[in-house]
Image 1 (spheres, rainbow, N blue to C red):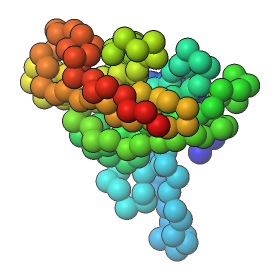
Image 2: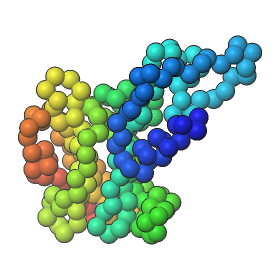
Image 3: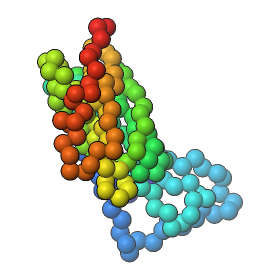
Length: 185
């Protein structure tokens, strides 16, 4: 369990981390039959999972907005890498050493593909940047999809979505005209 801790922290602190496995490492031994049932941690497979199925860490991306607030975007726990959901969480500005200790707002959205990157850009030219969450499809062609979010005071809103964009397209430029005007709070 201690060997998993640094990898889990790296995912939370550093953002996306490729799964690395030692091919020579043997799978963990199964729990003895008389051992009491334990609840697996988020980074550990259940005891009845097939021994050959490695646990695939989810992608977690993190960005600091120009006003100092932090946004964390993470694939859903225990979901397939190619489809599922993602959570987007907004945290208040403060001590950079504890950038995620002041939760403000959050949302969950559908995900068709893997989280690829985050882009901060003023899509509607109102002087306040939006955050674009970009996902890449796992199938043939690696098509892109994206959602654009705005952050006003203590709220967040999904302002636009786009899907089935060719892999070589500028998806940020393509989603910009779809951003709906912000409504007054």
